[in-house]
Image 1: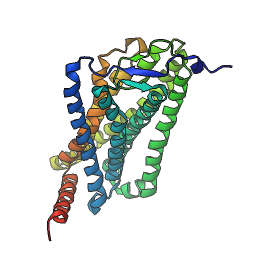
Image 2: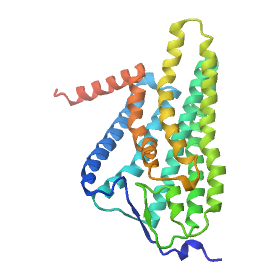
Image 3: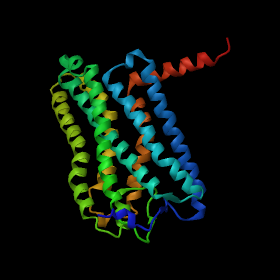
Image 4: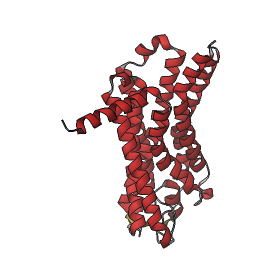
Length: 314
């Protein structure tokens, strides 16, 4: 049987981006270049601070360092291509488009799984503190990281292979700033029924399961914290979860808005929500976690202090 993508007349796609007006391209280039540099710098500082400070060698910060690394890779998959389109190059090859889509789904879902693992870590720390060290031992943390990285890649591979089966005819204009499943499926001139079934079944499970784990963890945390008699104890418990909850709300709020809707309702209005979970959340994560976390702020101060002392002339 002939592979359907061999009959496609499309060898490249055109990404329309955020705006087609020439006057918007330069300001958008400067804005997203600045956001990209802030994202890379902020997340690198988080990683360096965690790995250079012995006080931050705990499971929570171990997972945070991997989240920061994933955010760097996630943003790098998207923003440099956006910057090129602002300058002039709006075309992307068929293979390049599928490659970008693969990494967007793999890294985006890895972010999602790390947020769930971090919620689980907070649940054990607050609800079962006496067994925290044995429950969240190093080997188990490594296994959780390996699972959080491998499953999203298998999920992404499935959807990329299914998309590659589709036929694309004359229309190759993507009304988006990245190669996403929904706009690509809308361009197909063959049936997308199987793709939609898999998205609504397997895709929903992969997307919703980490969120359910996070919700369960925080319900149990809330029940436990409300039983703490002292107000100071409650504040301390909530302070360790506040930054994580802020990130979860931003990330999942925008993702659910974009993906938990039928293909036919997907419009250009979803671009803003896509920007939130692909670009904005990755940029804000270092600020959210450092501003609301005394240990991390202290680690960052130590790191900057060492850099200044090394730079100072002897």
